[in-house]
Amino acid sequence: ATTQTMSATTNDTSDPAARLQELIQKREEILRGGDVHSQLHRIKELVQKEEACVVEIERRRVDAIMKEYEEQHPLVTEECPLCLEDIQMTSMKSFVRFSCCGKGCCRECNLQRTIHKVKKCPMCRADIPTERKASKQMKALAKKGVAFAQAQEGIKILSGGNGYPLDVKQALK
Image (cartoon, rainbow, N blue to C red; front, side):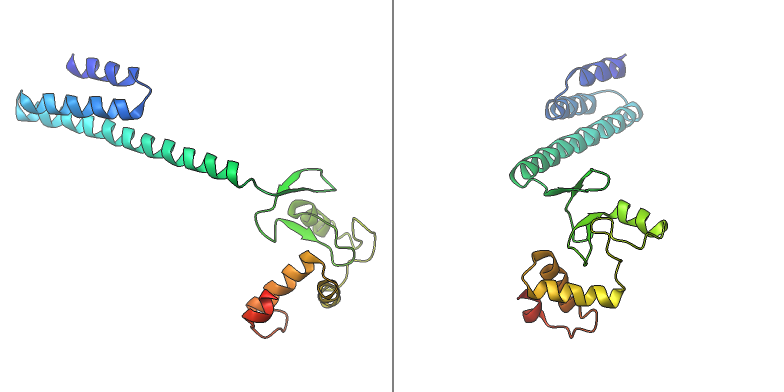
């Protein structure tokens, strides 16, 4: 009967901190009386409920921090001109840019273009360049001051990719 009353009492409160305090008080009451075997069983139940409350408190704390962070730092999005989905720009790979025109699409649309072996740029209809030609086009765009091309070239220099020597100072320029 005590366990049922305890469960009903702890489930009534939606505030996990209040539930935790209530459970701690119940544990202290149990320790004051009864035989050791029944005390251990009831305390084990309470400890499990206390742990669940602590986890819930921590989940709510993290959720509040994440909400505050997202309000202060909204994600940058760009609309894919092919599927019209908003793409969250979480990395350089979120949005695929074409070296022929500088326009781009989401990774999923680019994957579909590749699977269907489309050889033309979906934006400007130019032939999709070979990797070597695309690299030259990106270099040219970067020299002209095009931001996305500069970022991609900087990453290549920073990692020592595409024949670039690894050069942190040059990459940051």
